[in-house]
Image (cartoon, rainbow, N blue to C red; front, side, top):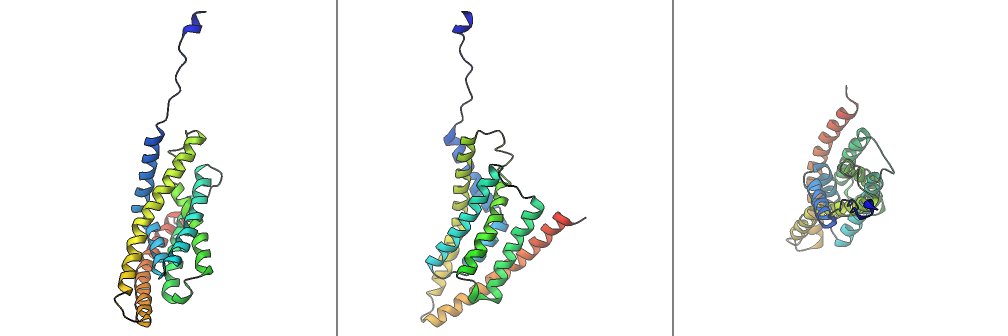
Length: 214
């Protein structure tokens, strides 16, 4: 039969390695230009003096935003931007103000709970940059894109977290006794967080006006 000899049309092949690299870079770039996310992660780092505390709070934040990023990118959950953006701004203000006014309580389970709760909204914010680009993708490609983007987000975070934590650690070692080290840590936490809170309040006002203003 004549049609038997016709070649079958080829299904377009996805260059998965190139897609992985593109979405990895997209995740890194999203963080480096996302001042809202950088402010929040900086406020978390400013309250840590030990590596174990840093690992815990960053891991909890990562877990939370990865969950909602994946669910939102797969169109399984959705919250309007007019809710997500003010909540992200509120997260910055909450954590930074807590660092300034109640620095001793900015550690422990309460801080981990805040990092997880607000991390859920940050994940929805991350997903905003993915939804349109991933609409026509098959599920397997979406999973790869989400994984690559999430890795990029974490690389971007560590580009901020590690230098900031290291600088604070080095500054502490310029003091001889533990009491002087604690005073310096508290001073850095309060001054740095005061700056973050001012920026967060400005962002919150802008987000609220864009979401609910006339």
